[in-house]
Structures are given as structure tokens and as C-alpha cells.
Length: 546
Image (tube, rainbow, N blue to C red):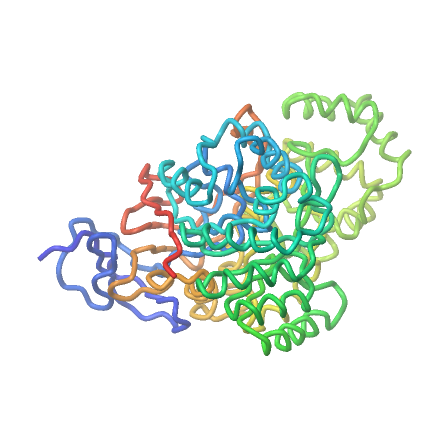
């Protein structure tokens, strides 16, 4: 009897941590039906010779909540092997939402996550009030990837407290009401609850978002609703005492963002702190996979203020390129750059290079400071020269987070942290980290060997699947959902980021394609071949099952 699909002749890395073994994978009715030697033919055969076959990757930190409305392909993460994405991170969600609060929640997402408000308002149907209705709306959008969602503290606070949610503490009755709203959201499909205690995340009026300074007792009350439902609690900016309080109450999984500094020994020190925290509950940290932060270049954000620079900002890329090739204009740009203090440390700004793939692992010699010094130039002259030489494609990355790859590698050896935090769908014109799975494969597995292939794939698949509470995804075994990647481990990598204007209203965003991915399947449907979407949109809304 023929199978629907047989992936034949690859090296299978099954997601459990085991290393690769040769074999085939058979798929029927969207599930894996056999792994190993498969004699029966497939109605469709995928030749995996010379490639690895792995489970699809699980992205624990996205903000695709809005973008999914106009981009159901969920790019760029779908170009990088992601088959399941978690929405609703950082406490900012679009549900629950009373009709009068639609603009408020959209504006908050704009200021916190750099997603244009107009795109949010016009790109989503806004035909829900409760979280279950939001998931219903997402389901009707027919996404290409599987999505799971958390209900956010900001929306819950606004829903219960109105304007008082921003700066006031909740009454005991309001805490109970919030817990009830969260409980209902989980009962209707949310996989958990997210909160945000990071003061720089602001509302349009400059005040920190609701919940930032909430009494931890409020989180404890909510945890009483999350725990019995086996839900996930996610926190950004919470200190260890708050995390412990949440864990001791919910007695469940706690997910939070983490990182390390550039100081020698900081990676091991942070790993030590994680181990101590893990003694108090089921904690999982995630962090960016490389130095991350603000990215700029002639095609996108410009690094200097001034009359001539402001005129340059109003031009498209062709106009900008023509302007900087004009000697008089270039001289004015340099004079304005020399006349003002640099807004960021040049030793932390790195040129991504002019190769096919960006050089995210570049050493100090590729910093803007070192490049300018070596050429005997002011750094603005270096910026303009490299922009001219690359036809405006040159990009520079300010490493604000995880500045040292050596220290980050030491942190990644911890059993309590996963590479992640790509923030796909957020900071869309400022940062591009959505290709993080490809960097794990190319740098942390292939180039440095920090992870073996088996362990690295586990940290991209079954590990985060467990955090989400998914029992039928994350490994290649009979009965599991057929979310699968076929890729060339010697070739897989991120390509250079580029700025496009494909958001509603022509708003800009960075995208980043990949290379090395031969085939991606979601629920047994072939969704990408050689990095291009097939048109299949086989994703599912993964509702919490208790």
C-alpha cells in the first residue's frame, strides 16, 4: 500500500538528542507513519540523499500576532525551518479587547514592538472580544505555520481596570477578575499567560505599559488560575524573586528572556544563576543566538542627524545612492557627521560584510571604529564608502545584547536555556533576528561544534515543544505530526537582510531569506521547496489541551 509521502534516503535526526542515522520517513494523513527502512512507495517521493531530515523548528518568541493578518506565510521565520510559532509574548496581545480599546491595543503594540498601528488596524478583522474569538479569527486566516498563543497581561489589565490599568495597583477583586479572564482564555485555547516588567516598553504617551509595576501578588493570583490548567507562564523583565513566586504558585512551566554581558566569565556566571533558579521550578530561559540590536544602512535607517541627512531620508534607495555619489553632497554629509557626537559606541557597531551571508561572528577588526581607523577615515566616511561600494546594500549592526559570542557560547552550554528570541514580527524596521534557527545550524553546530547535531536539533524541536506543552510535535516518530525539515547541513545559512516595503500602506520592514533548506512540511503538506513557498497553508491553531 502506498504512503502519501516518503522522504527517502536522508540522515534522520529525530529531535530526541540522538545523532543522525540513515533512513526514510513515511507520512500518511498528516502524521508520520514510519521511520527507518520504508519499502512501500509514496504517492510523492522526496529525495533526501545528502541531507538531514529533522522535525520542524519551534519558535518560542515571536510577535507575529498582527503580521499573520496580511502575511499568512509568516515570513521570515517560515524561510528558516520554523513550523510552529508562539504568539502573545511580552504581555502585549490583541485579546481580550473591548470594542472601545481596539486603537489603544494597536497603538501599544506599535510603540512596544515597532509594528505600524495602521497596519495592525487594517490588517486584522478585529471581530473578537475574548481570547477564544481571537484564535478563531487567526484560524480563519489559514496560516502556513502552526501557531500557539498566550494571553497578555497588558490586554487583561485594560480589560478589567480600564485606564487605571496603566499606573494603579489592582484591588483584590480586580486581581480575581483578571485571574478569571486568564482562566477563560486558557480554557478557550491560550497555551498560557505572558507578562512584561521591562520599564522601557512604553505606551504612546510615554508611560510604561500596564503590568510593568504590578504588585507581584497580582501575578501570584493569576498563577493560581494558570497552574491547575497546566498552562505556561512567560515573563519579560521579571527578576528571579518574581519568577520564583510565579513558579511556586503555578507549579508549572515558566519561560523567560535572559542573556549575558561582554565581560569575561559572564556566560558561566549567568549559567550558574540559571542552575540555582532551576532548583525552584520548571524554568526555561531563551536568548538571542548572536549579538543583537539596532541595524542601519543606506537602504534603511540612517545614523546621523542634520539638514543634508534629513534630505537624504526623504529619498528612495536609488536617490540616496545617487546623492552620496555626488562629491558635494557627500562632503556635506561628512561635515554634519563630524560636527556631532556619535550616538552609539562605534566599537559595538559591526559591518555585516558584502558576502552572500552576513558575518555575524565578525571580530573587533570589523567594527566601524576599527574599519575607520584602518582606512584613516572618520566613521561617516567609512559608512558612505561602503555604501557606495555595495550599491547601498551595506548594513551595520549595533550589538546591544549578547555582545560576546564566547560568553554566549558558555551560557548556551546550560541545560536550562534555549537559543531563540528572534522577535519575528516586531521591531520590523530596526532589528532582524528572525533567521536565528539558521544561525544555530551554521554557527553553533557546524562552525563551532558547541552543540552536536543531535543536541542542537533537540534544542530547536522537542525541547521548546515540551515548553509549549505539545505532545505530538518535536520528534520524528510514528504517530507524531509531520512537521519536518529536509536541509543540507553543509550549506544552511542566513542570507543578507534587506529592507522591503510590503506591510499595509507600504510600511518598511527587514526580511531575511535563507539557503540550504530543501523541503519543509507542515502537517504533512509540502510548504516550501528550495526556500520558496509552494502555496500550501497547512498550519493549525494549536489550542491548549490541558
